Image (cartoon, rainbow, N blue to C red; front, side, top):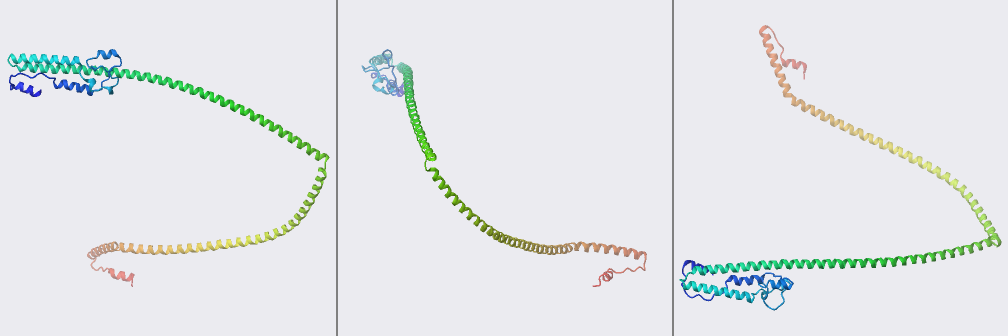
Amino acid sequence: MAALINAAASGKLVAEKSPPFTNPPETLSLTETISHQDVASAPDSSSTTAQTTISIGHSEAPPTQAWQVTRRHAALSAAELRQARQGQQQQTSRSGNAEHSGGQFKHRHAALQQTVAEQRRLLKEQQEQIRHLQERQNILELKHEEEKIALLATAMEERARQRAERRREIEERRRQKQEEKLRELEKQKRAEWEQELSKQATQHYLRTLLLHRGLAPWKNLLEQSHVNTQLYKQLSMFDFNTDQLKDLRFILEARAERFHRTRTQRKVFMALLDHTTEERITAWDNEQRAEEHNSRKAVKKCFAGWRRLPVVLREEKEREARREQLRRKVAEILPDFRSSPVGSLWRSVNPL
């Protein structure tokens, strides 16, 4: 189509009988576009009859879900095919008249553009209708989901209520069983307690009879005499053992005192020895440190004297220079003045 339009614009086409007009690529692409879209038609019969221009023209029931739409459902209906053929015939007659009237290709180009515009308009309307149907289908699906959710919530509440009732019944039966079990335990404990009291009463009665009217007092007397005899023997042995223990205690105390005195003297002498040794070591250390300090002090003084020797010599030279100047001045004033030389004075002071 683009090559045909370019040839018509350049004037290279020859006036000849045109072949029968076929559907343009836009019409063919329309069905493919519709077939690739997810079309969802309305569930009720009134909406399907109202939208017959884009619905399936067969006797089948319209699809209710988007995944059920196929190329067959997106095919053009018989009315749409008739309308397309009439448009083709009109365009063919128009193109034939244009060719017979002088081969004006501009009218044919305009007709093609009009056809393309019409097909685009139809495609846009169909897309708009498909969008409306999809929105309606989505709304219906949402309403259906809400109803399902509401029913599910109601069913869940009912099941929860039934479970709560069953739990209450189970708890009530359990509580009744526990109460019955507690009553049985109380009865059993009371019977055991009464049996124990009866047994204790019987034992007390028998013991009273034995104590007051049987042989028990004689047995008790014999046992008491035997116990007293054994106790006397034990006390005698205890006195004897006590005397021996006293002697042993005196001996052990003397040994302990002697051992304590010896250990104390040893500790004192050892402490004195340690103290004397530490003091002697401390004195040796102090003496050694004093000698080291004296040596360091002497060396430091020696080095300080050596470092100061140039300064002392320089000062001595300056004093000697001043003395020489004074001698000269005195010699100028007193010609017969004789001064003692410095070397003789130094030798007189230090003869060695």
